[in-house]
Length: 219
Image (cartoon, rainbow, N blue to C red; front, side, top):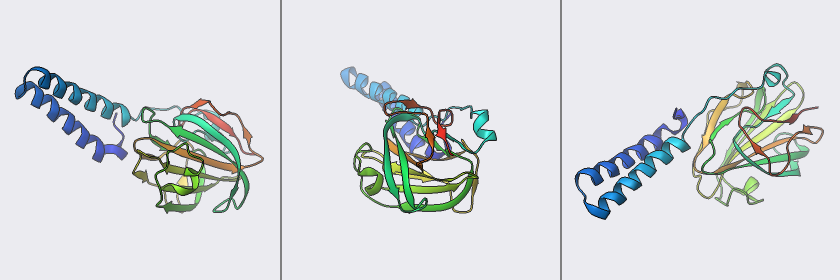
């Protein structure tokens, strides 16, 4: 199933891919026909793969206990570092960073249940998503959620290829853990910033699955 967050790009890319296939089949010959058809098939296949929106099973423990922190996106954990968070937690905190390659599912989910007490969109640069400065300098959406246990801030951050963030969240919303909130298109990063007291279950290098992998527990 194609995510609704990507309909604009996906249908355009599918149309382009199909046009290349038809062009090759009906108007071109020899090597040009093969090249056009192959490029069309690759475009269609990549589009269907990139904009896929697979079903996910939210852990029952997370649904019943808002101290459970789950992965907001598919990808690889590239950083777990101390930070000084100035927007929402306004304290020293721990940042977990997940890098999404173009092959990962790019639909994003809320990592916790709670009330959206902070939202800010920031235009910015397009550094590679794994660059340490991308967390502060790149285009991003910052979403702060108040649970019954603590405040959590998470960021949708663009990369070199990702040039558009889709985010449905606004201040005042109430979110349920694992709920879809948007996507980042064509390679990106997500940061989750939690109090230092949080018990973290993952380590750098781990692969996580959005909506399913438990990242830790708020204390």
